[in-house]
Length: 384
Image (cartoon, rainbow, N blue to C red; front, side, top):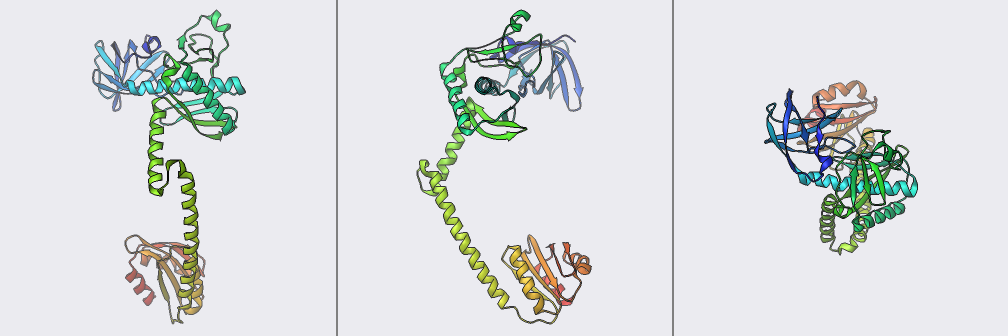
């Protein structure tokens, strides 16, 4: 089949176009459509495919193989007909801003530190992978320089140079290509082999923001945003900070100190709660009475250590099993059981069957969970 004319190479800003349907094959619940030309960019170079429609049929995915671009649609199209393609251009333009921003960052990383971009993903998550690490301070410097290039509003051009020009040109590339190489040039700052659409000038990017950076495969993975996506992220962050400042009754510029103060208060309250819980547990243990047979205890303390301490204290107080439970009838109970006279490991299956539970342990102690109601549990241990 003839190769597809890549209209996005000619004009990155093309939002609609007309084309002839060369083939249409059903593949499960979608249709594989090939056109003679397209403005839809396929999934390529780390960038996700464009979306949109062809004569009303939704374009779900776009893939390229051996120069032939296939559009996967939710409805069939007649072979030989002329169709009108319409891109979801807001989404495309956002990708153009981000991809152009990635070139600026990668170019600076390569020029200043000799690091190469070894992985780029522009889909649900936007990341760059480099084969070296930088400090946060160094990343901030890269971010500052990248945004200065944005402010300069330099031209971004794309071209397919001749073999002679290509051989004489120094450029970045992740692939060893020798023909049909498309070079994207950003002023005097970067030249890189790339197949994707880009904005015409750096000023259109608006803003480049490096978010977090983590160690990754011996190098570094950076999450970043650019253009309208960076604006949306900033707006959401500002809204979150505004909400936090209102909840803490502090100025937005003081939310970090406000959170630290709140953490200190919580730590103090947690320490007090722990102390009171321990005192209450001591009272509960002191209130345990000598019992013939089994001892069944229900507590509102969710700490499993407290449950274990109750059982440890209750075992010598009874001649059978000391069973402690935390929970409620609606959500079920967690339990710990101990005994000095009964083999709990041997009894665990019987107990769990009766209480709708699961769990196990040793002959002296078992733990787990159950779904039986409190009254059923109490009645069971009275008869066991």
